[in-house]
Image (cartoon, rainbow, N blue to C red):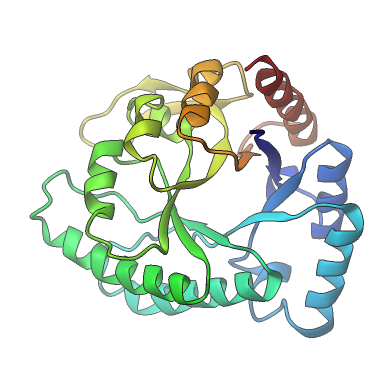
Length: 269
């Protein structure tokens, strides 16, 4: 069993095709790409443009590990869901056209009290999207971060569909919690279909709101990558470790080092 290494090409801050070519140069097996706007938006990725992109990716011997359809709003607001749900379905449709199985997003911060009406609001929309993904042979995968893994699992247990899954980001759990990013793998084992390789530290835990945190290059933060990868191996995960770098002055350099770091860690397992 081997992990695959990927790159969120938007992190490279290059045009789409240049980013894909750079992912190849950096030794990645594939890549994730945002599809919420611009060239990759569903309304723009059709016809000849769609075929040309698919041919280009195939020529390079890469694959799209996942689409990122995160609108930055979550699904905890009933009024916003009137637009975010239909738009998210368009992302799933695009995934089908591209031959991609995973669309990632964020559900949004859930109250720990499962009797909160927010749970019902989020569940209604996520159930609709999970079933739509399932019908289309895809997964709608929420990224970890603002919630304890146990809380997220309890919420997901309400979603009676195989279309709902998890995009596991250990750094988000540390920066937003900090929560147990190693034990969380076992907690969410039945849902993990994609992961982000990112690192960070929680500088100040704020019980009343957002923590103060810092994202750092892989290996320089609080993610215990050796134990984390072992935890993924123990649940028989063999998918992508997709490098995400949201800050930094030289993302190409940082991401190249991250791919090398991951390959070294993988070889040591």
